Amino acid sequence: MTLDPVHFDGIAELADRVDYEGEERDHRELAETVWNDFLDPLVDANGTRILEPLDDLRRRCVDVEDVALEADRFPTMHGLDSGSINPKVFKNGLVVDVAHAAMSATPSDLDLHDSRTVVKAVHTNDTSRDFDTEWERYGDGEASERRIVHAPRCDQYEEDVVHALALYVAESRHALEHADDVADFLLLDGPIYPKGLLRWRDRGTELPALFDDSATVHAVLDNYVRLVERFVERDVPLAGFVKNISAKAVVRALRDKEMLAPWAHDAGFFSQVLERRERVGDEYERVTDDLTLTNWFRSRAGSDAFFGSSEADRYLDRDLDRDRYDVTFCMVYDPRRDLVYKIEAPHAFTRDEACRRKIERQVLKAIAVERGPPTVIAKADELARISHDSTRSLLDRFEESFDSELDENYNAVRWGRDY
Image (cartoon, rainbow, N blue to C red):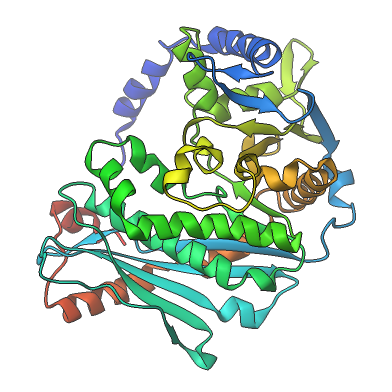
């Protein structure tokens, strides 16, 4: 039901009582102070360097039209993504998610696009059953793979567990299986490591135990190590493109030192650092002719620290020096949409200045042309996405196979099934 105008005005007028314009100006000044005085390096409350520049701390800009017309740094590009139906709970106690990984290519490779990796993750409290299967080929020419992963039993977080396992098993398997198809550059849709799994170490008591004990979790972690090593061995760069940035490394470190950090997340901080304004009359307007970006940073904040740490020795065998697995990143700001993106890559590639320049320039060109994520990311997202109609049909099939209905609440009646 549409709000009656009197109630709409009543709500909207509440915003007039929150006078925050002046505070935002102060935040911009604070962002400048943090940038100039605290990021070279950023040290947490324990004195640990959690963020430090790979070279000089600096901001740069590139003309949108100029970079859009530049020659490609890589003759071909590949993208990788994994989509899912999201966790579903059934009345017989099963909790299920299905993930579907795909790789895109530019120029297009239809055979590669048709190859998929499908993982169904299943949780049940029935300890007498084991639904785990081995990998099996299916489809035309048996170019695709599928398996069922039986999630470790837990009394809470069941939906989080099946979702993370389905996504990361599918993504990491598909990346490894098609690593040799990538000739020049692979760009993952999202971070380079499975941060959803790595965060288990700090959530409650059950998830840290699952992280320590689950063979499936350890296999996923190993897949990402093998992926980095495979691409290093082949001298083919690997990076990640993060569209939605939720990291809070900077703001958390500042708050831990009892400093003011008014931003909700790091993206808010970096957007104020990278946004350029010019005076027009009595007002300041955003400059939209240039993309702006930071230098590259090495991150050992939160889950970023895991793969290059001594802690990982408990779970992984690594062939390269630890620091080559470290997460490095730069931030890119597109003023046309007022959005911040993060480019991530293992230190194994970005320690070489020429390599990191090629990566950033290729991604900058793609952003300039697409006014958003690079084509290979959009294409991988489209290939991996499971549509509402497909999800609806799959769930009907699951209900028939399980001889059980979805365990829904009144919202399914009020709003329709959330597929």
